[in-house]
Amino acid sequence: MPELPEVHGYQQYINATILHKKIVAMDCRDDRLLKMTLPTFKKHLIGEEFTGTERIGKYLFLKTSGDRVLVMHFGMTGRPNYFHDVDDRPKFGHIMLAFENDYHFAFENKRKFGWWDLTENIEDYREKHDLSKDARELTLEDFQTSINGRKTSIKNILMNQSICAGIGNWMADDILYQAKIHPENKVNELSPDEIELVFKKMHHVIETAIELEAHYSHFPEEFMIHRRKEGADCFHTSGKIKKIKVGGRSTYFSPKWQS
Image (cartoon, rainbow, N blue to C red):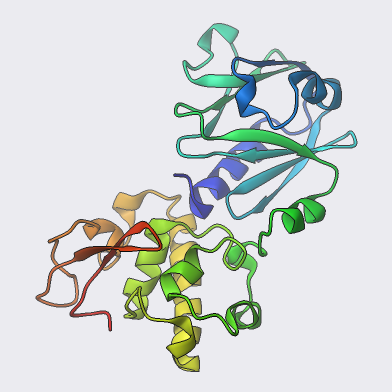
């Protein structure tokens, strides 16, 4: 699933391709991918231009010259694709926009878990969908305030989009691997220093992933992403990686390294 770093990359791609171009047509092969009717999307998008973007976690907001903001969520396999010839429309480009310059934009969505929505106001949308500020923008104080009084596991905290918008499963595992903290540890039992360490490692993982454009094979050797498989060798010890379920999600950690 595209997580914060991937969606950041999609944002940069969109900024470089489809801003300030007049939209002249829209097509959707499966209306289930739209949170509103296709005529509603056409009413608010055709004749307008995208003027800028904003990202909150895994949500990408495309501001328009009109009175609505387009909301994209990429689901499991979503990705943007800007191309010229309509015959080059990707097989899974279920939603497509056409621009006045004769170029096209497809929202590729093979497994159809991604979707589009419209909103009048980004902040209202964020609050309605119980999203925190983007995890990259969180301060330590934000993080401490959000987890105060909670008694769930630290892995569940990191995966909670109302606390750390944009953090997904592999990122949470890597953050805790970097911090040497067991994913099942209760957040209320962690020391202030451990909480601060988790926060710092969260930003370290985010910034590393963005800098390397989410090319996992290029990540530093000590990252968990290279060994998220039960029985793999821990980078730091002679132990093996173990797989468990935390909050219903597959979780990888090193029992000898993380306590």
